Length: 462
Image 1 (cartoon, rainbow, N blue to C red):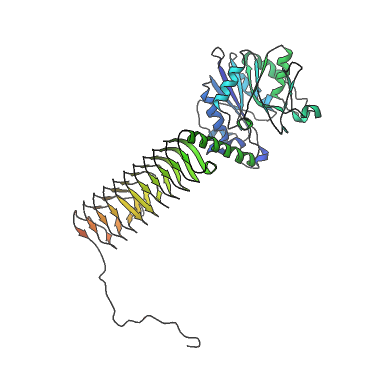
Image 2: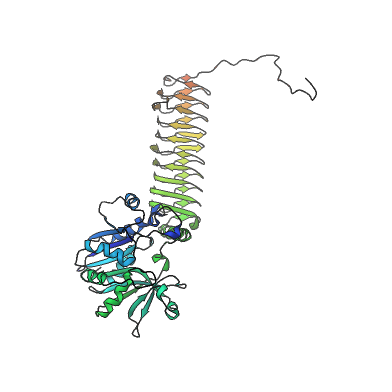
């Protein structure tokens, strides 16, 4: 980037997006869990611009509320009269020095590296266009060049004749303009066209008449500059985004069983030799240590997973920490506020919430552990429940090291099970279970000699 030319960015995000057929503003539809506009702003911030102006209109305050960033300067376009009119709304807020980069809020895959290369390719004081060659250019403004192959003008498709429509090089809409000239050019735009709109692209012809240099930077990958106009295109760009993320992870040493069936919707840090099975979803901030295996259909959201961990199929882990060598699932749910120490086993149909389970402890089957502090080497039998809620307040269960909790036990909190204690199967524990002792509560077993099971009546019997 030219250090002598500071960059300020204008993002156009005011369109209604009628082809989305949705009440949600187009720029708030999501790719990888983030609004389209957020992806554009992420790339914009990476350029470290002097200012970011977002022109908004349709959806109004809904758009502003979804993008909570005090550093953004919001500009209202109350009437959508074209791209030129949108930039007119932002121009009074742009400093007169340096350059203005115009981006679009529905172009989510454009990389900061491409934007830097574009800015570097445009000499200071010149007007720059980002173009792309499409196999099927229908719907796009065509780049018209002169005999010397210089850009002469841009013609929107609705205003183009058959000869111009045959051109395959098209305008992406992304432009960089000298700030000192912008106001004058915008004031001279006219809406004498098929749409009755003010086209920003008309400044190209104005710049050429003034003898200003025009630099066209051609992007190699059409998907990088593709906009979203309907939900089919949204799905296409979602898969392309996921393909790129998966490719980057695999090049860093992550083994992904099927790159077409993984969804990454946040900031991930995955060590080499981690294996992701099909249909894994990673959301928020996710860190996974070396040698871990994330099974089919697993959802991880805001988690830290140690090394050599197994998260078996169809488990859900949210806002939790999993220690080295632990095993979770299959079909387990680890809820927010949970920490599993090294070597812990949480098995099938076990739910853990806001609890810490100590090193080497196991809860392998059909249990609920909530608001509990469990020590090391504890065995939780199948069907155990910590009864942590009394209808008004949550209470804590404490199980000390090396305790054994028999199957089908109810621990009515607040309650403590002492170190090395044993709880007999089928017990309801309402008071402290002493360390090293057997505690149980059962109704005495009885046998009724001679009892007969009822029989079904035969047809015709009264």
